[in-house]
Amino acid sequence: MLRAKKAAARSRKLGQYWPPVFHEPRIQQISEALTAGGYHPFHAPCGILLDEANRAVSTCIRCATCDGYPCLVHAKADADIIAVRPLLGHPQVTLLVNAEVERLITDESGRNVRFVQVNRQGVQEFYEGDIVVVSAGAANSARILLRSASDEHPAGLANGSDQVGRNYMFHNSKAIVPLGKERNDTVFQKTLGLNDFYLPREGREWPLGNIQMLGKSNAMAMKGEEPKLTKLALRWSLDEVARHAVDFWLTTEDVPRPDNRVTVGSDGSIHLAYRKTNDVEADGLYRELRKVLNHIGMASHHVLSKNFYMSMDVPMAGVAHQAGTCRFGTDPADSVLDANCKAHEVDNLYVVDTSFFPSIGAVNPALTAMANALRVADHLTRRMA
Image: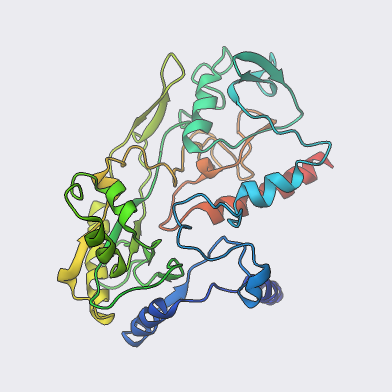
């Protein structure tokens, strides 16, 4: 109970500094209509450096090109802005650019990484340290370990379980654009989420997933996403469609399958074998959205599919939410990492990105990756003390 009270107090304190981003009028209307319809909308977490109480000194200017665009004023609270840049002035921090880790080389015992082999602008370099942390993303972290095969680790470094590269996951997602009769002049739209269908309930054995707002449509983005369908469309007609669009993103959990996996070719190239999962649940979430639209004044026949994962052939290339290729667990026979994300078979090797996920859930994995990185950092601090 005391721990819960401390956690609640900490949450309230953080809320003073990171309050939810306000809904603009049209999104507020949607939120109120959903609540009146018996749903439970919430303020979506936004990783932006925004001070709405004092906009004049706010880094974020709440522009229309946030979701899916690079930030020109450095207002996204990403790893580059929050973690990397503030540390670059410290003497014990070195950032290498134009450098690619090719493989990890162990000592004769195979129990410790001795060298990190790097290709830096065509020149091979070697680095060493007491502890080595790999955090290259689920596909590339697996690639590094698989390329690091040796006599001690013939199937790839830390791969005695044959799980490195397996259980690759990324979300089964859809982007949907309902068109309303009234204009939607929202600029910063991604402030609302809905988890009413996240878990199973009576009449539904499996969870469906998360619904949230998506960055606002614009004519040029529509042309980019559907070049063939919009080739003959006049610019003004696409602008008019975008003005009436209310964009939603639907996320359904991907299921870990051993055969959904990353392998590496003889030239070091990544090969991904993948079969989609949870299509029934993804379709169920879409049907629920159509019901939701009736509560916000948008009849279901006004819904247009804007699923650029499908129409732009991105199922294999949409790797923003990739996870699972070095999953953690207590049994070395069916996992790569232990509970602290240390490789079972290598004493000084950690993998600290979304590779450790045993399952992916149905929300953006970034916050989980951050929380786990902080947890592992505490463990490493104690280990190095």
